[in-house]
Amino acid sequence: MNDVFMKCLFEFIGTAILVLFGDGVVASTVLKKSKGENGGWVVITIAWGLAVMLGVFIAGPYSGAHLNPAVTLGLAAAGTFSWSLVLPYIVAQMLGGFVGAVLVYAYYKNHYDATEDPATKLGTFCTSPAIRSYGRNFFNEVLGTFVLVFVILALATSGNTPEIGMGALGAFPVTMLIVALGMSLGGTTGYAINPARDLSPRIAHALLPIKGKGSSDWAYSWVPTFGPIVGGLLAAGLYVLIF
Image 1 (cartoon, rainbow, N blue to C red):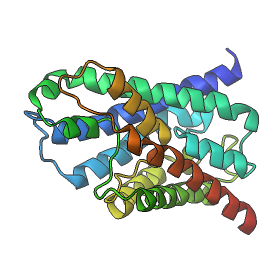
Image 2 (image 1 turned 60 degrees about the horizontal axis):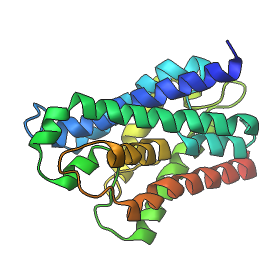
Image 3 (image 1 turned 90 degrees about the horizontal axis):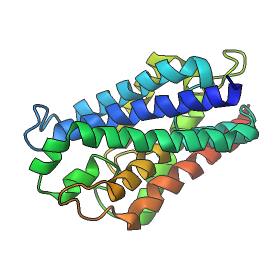
């Protein structure tokens, strides 16, 4: 099987699993009549960390487990990943994010129907700010993703693994990193830090026949899309400057 196709296939599967479990825990804790309803922020942040861990377990040995366009762009800008693979990786990640979100909807269909609030339904697909302030929200996403990518670059060197990405850190360290990001820096915007985890599910929300779904909040969508990209590139710049 073609090596590039294999890498992209595992980026697709890993990102789909990441979103299935990540958006899935949000659906479990906020949708009506779910046994997990009102589980709270701690449950969400821990499960998001575990969601990334599962994606890393799947994709790490084959693609490096970027699972995030901001990570892929940051690693390429830092010189630790081939620019020729950037577009195929991002396409695979975005498709994986879309499929993962569709699976969450299919799994929780009855609970979406039982939930009246459109914002609650949207929140199971993508992020929205606790306080809407586009400039501040953008800064939050930039900083959160900067931390993510800089830690990956600082710890995952070419001497550790032939494929540089989140998989280079090992599943446990990256799990702790995502949990820490969520608990410490996630309260403002919901810490998208990943366009494949926000934009792709947002598109799924717009396309799916969700009862009473309301707006997909496209006015905000640029923040969790471009904020992570800028954060990833800034992290790459600092990494190159220091190392």
